[in-house]
Image (cartoon, rainbow, N blue to C red; front, side, top):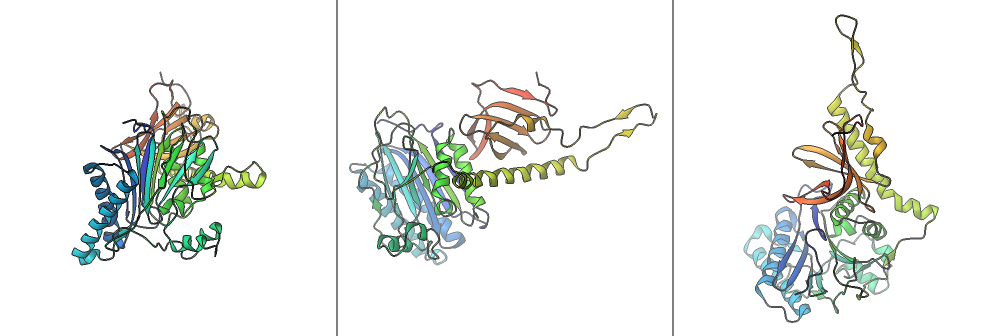
Length: 404
């Protein structure tokens, strides 16, 4: 079976509880099955225990079905996987009164040979990024009250994004004994370098599709792109749990993409003063957030700035480096986006250019830094950043002097 997915560096899977909720009701998984590469995102509902339980059962059941059954007709296969998950969630809610009324949305994609088959229930979404057109399209249509109003022409797509009932869905797994999932009518046949984005509405409801497109257009590393998308959703409010999966397709040759969009798509606007301002605001928010965090760390670590004080013999002085004498500030790569992570209990800041990979990793403990090409890797379920071993890396002390 041909694989067009590189799990080592072509797949991102991240989830975040957001800024408002104290728990995460989203679940997701990426896995290889005998029937192909499987990607699942579920967004649970029904309270603290109910929502998390529903989404977990949904992911487990879909993956179980995909692993234990034979796929002859992919659309029917995915439909049956979702129906199986619905039955498992419904049975659990009926047997446990504390879980009554729980349910979950679900998006599932199956990469089989050189095609992608997909299906969904609810308002979690699947997007397709076409690299040649530099455009982003929806492959799914929300099973929601607001989408029904759009379909009958009562409101526009733009009005739907701000409608007071935008979060009311018409279909989900587990609420009723049976459900009718919506499979794709035709498979996606991606071109080289194209991407699929699967997300809960904690992402799509918190940011514009134009901003999603800009992140994907500039992405050289899907894990960095996923982190930026989550940060943007949080800067837009972060009122819901946020789950992101990104799959970059490679090894498909020179073919043209074939896909079935559910909207006209969005493309990057032509450069003008107003559009440039609109496209810059998310990066300004993130840069400002990182700057605030860095400043707070500096104040916490260094404390009040010290002055020169004479020693006892009054003939020598002891000096310290001023707080703002950080050489790394002059070495930041142009166009870099700031992120941070915790590595071995030490908070580390990374300034990383999505387009060319150039980056600076700053150790906030002693403010030494490295310059080279940054890559994001998964470690113990977390994303950390490091210099690529195949690229030249230069190391410096806090004052800018090289480390041999």
